[in-house]
Every structure is written in structure tokens, then in C-alpha cells.
Image 1: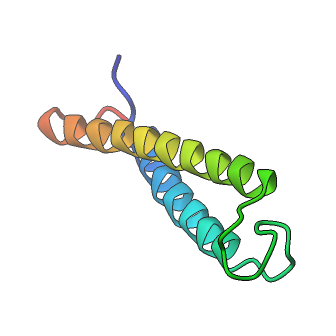
Image 2: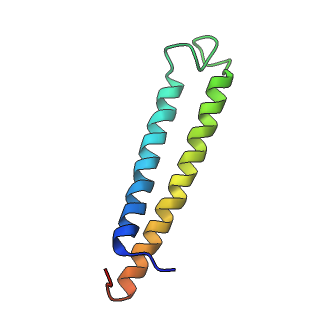
Length: 85
């Protein structure tokens, strides 16, 4: 299967966007001031809310890496062959 240059750029951009968004999400989760992520303020007792959202963020981050990698591979392939867009 061959990806078009446009699709490759979209997948690459989506992968980068996903990594930025989910990294920011984890930073904000760690700095939780509302008391949902930790039972007390010193980060010693993570709650189920914390673990579920951390799992969501890590999974989405890894999927973003996979999608971005597909996009980069598609871009490299379009450089080797003449453009057909």
C-alpha cells in the first residue's frame, strides 16, 4: 500500500499533535489541584481516576507515535518515487 503525500503529512501532523496533547495532559494530571488524582496533596496516594487517565494518556501517546511513524514512512517513500498526487 502506498500513501499519498497529503495523507502522509496528515498522519505525521496527527502523531505530533497527539504526543504534544497527551504529554501536556499527563503534566496537568500530575499537578492536579482539584484533589481527584491524589487523595492528599503530596502525591503519595494515587486514586483510580489517576490510574485510568494515566493509562488513557499512555495508550493515546503510543498510538500517536505509531500513526506518526506511518506518516514519516509514507513521506520517505514519496521522496524515493516520483510524486503521483
